[in-house]
Image (cartoon, rainbow, N blue to C red):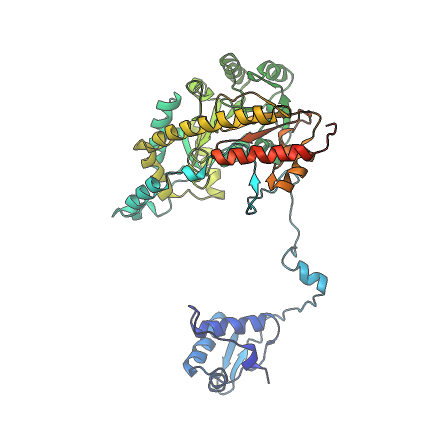
Length: 495
């Protein structure tokens, strides 16, 4: 007789009803082959006595198993494991296979060597260098929560809870159109806007529509690594041009255009990622003229437009766009907090409609309540007030960080004070390598991160991007101190 009493365990402390606990355990026993097809189950009175439960619990369990097709009831004979169930093959696991169970799939799938693992898990007590992220402790959570509650409590909110347009919430698109027209000099309507879950989605959608295998996309010799990977995933050819103190060297792009057709140019015009330099006015006009002449797209990633400390923000390329060649991508994630996945793609209406069709198959629609919340957050002026607050704080942090780097680590680092943004482009003394620095820094609970991604063209410039905005004054001092300790103990080597 099957050992029901020791094999079946019920707990009245669980939220799950006893009959479902029992049914799920029977299903597991059948799936594991411990109760094979055709096996007669013990009677309900007997099982109830063994498990010390009411007979109705067992009857309900058997009825559930019958409804799901795991058992069959034969009048005057009893309840049996469904004889038509395929026999489930047993696999004898060795110690080695037990360790790898559920870690390796039992099927083949396609891997892409261009994709890198993004590890967001952080160890407690370790300080992580980032490439310029906002301080989430400054997030206006109370204001956002207040607006969210107000919207969620409206009587007609149910109309926003159903399936809606893949373009994004219409109110947010209207508010964003007005906001971008006023703050960035754009000339758009809601029809030119697709709401995304951040800049990366906008970049991915654009690359899907623009690029096929061997199509050419132009980027800087130093470039945002996620953009490179996105284009490589499409099997596009990446052509690199130089980046100097005035941004991308547009003359080199013109030479490429004369030799072969290009499909797109990717640019972070405001603060080039990673070097933080600004694309000059002359080069902006030159690039726009080339796009019109050679009919290529400009993917303008304006990831930190709002943060300028020395002058007013320079209007994006999209503000001069009269021939619809610019795809303008931005988000509120970097400004407010990364958790709020609200971004936008701005382009010609036909391109926006096509991206919306594609977006509908990977992400049916965005979070309507969150989008309505940010529509009100922007319209009420809360976003602008938040930006003004951050500007004062980040300016102080930039000045302190640059001051300490120069005074305490001037021998090891060279850098220019950035005019805006949330990070510094730092050159390491070539007597040292980032590999050694990264290895030694771990002894002081400091993680440098993936320094290799800043030298995609293998130019050995020995520079990385170090963010300052997410650290308060004490943390900046601690970071500099950890770097000092690292260099005191590192061995000099040629890079």
